[in-house]
Image 1 (tube, rainbow, N blue to C red):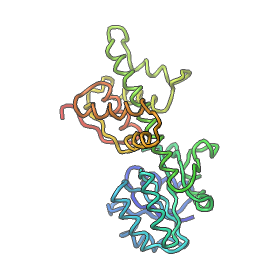
Image 2: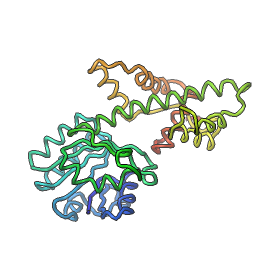
Image 3: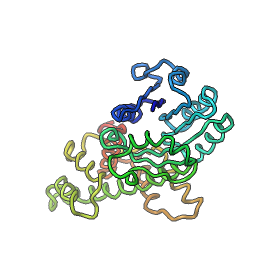
Image 4: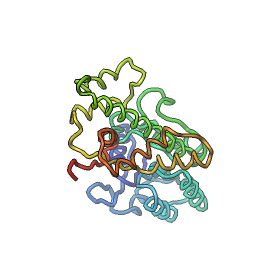
Length: 296
């Protein structure tokens, strides 16, 4: 199999390497020539055998809009586009309709795993027609974690369902990070009693009901910076948390924990706090997201 990847940032470049390690031929294009295998998007399309398979891994919004518009002109009937960026599910519905006019197939893939995905595999939530998903299954199998397929890959419904599931996934992630962060602040507050906060979290990693990969990453962050003094407690959000809350309002589904987590991030932009330093550290650990150094 030969696939094209558009967008070779932190995740796209790692995905290219993981696919190649699983004997899938990859041609990648990025606007940064130091990362790109070809000089242009048109060259990427020309390098792929028909029917083509193209994975789009660029920032959501107008950048993805532009790439899909270009592909609708460059690709041919029967080609397949997979949108693996963090797009809103409603955008996927537009993309699918636009490409369908030209007979181009479309699948949306919610991707989790951050900068660690090349090592451990990516959690994939996919939306699209059965035949299109089956066609791309060798790619999905290469990207997902080793082990049973159902533990790292799910075909969750038609076009749009993949990013809808990823949106909810990220809302849950916001809430989990906030809970760990608040626990960190409370433990750190009682330094007269709890003399080793890092050891406390480390001891939760096996056997306890709150063990998770996020907890392991928090322990890693504390090992690197025990007091989290090197960064400010300023936390951005990449959109999915807001979309989850907006969708919950539209569907009249109460999500108080997720809502509180997103509003806590807004609070972090007004004042520094130990809990928000913990959230910022977690985002940096799993996704390589930028942090604001202390003092800035």
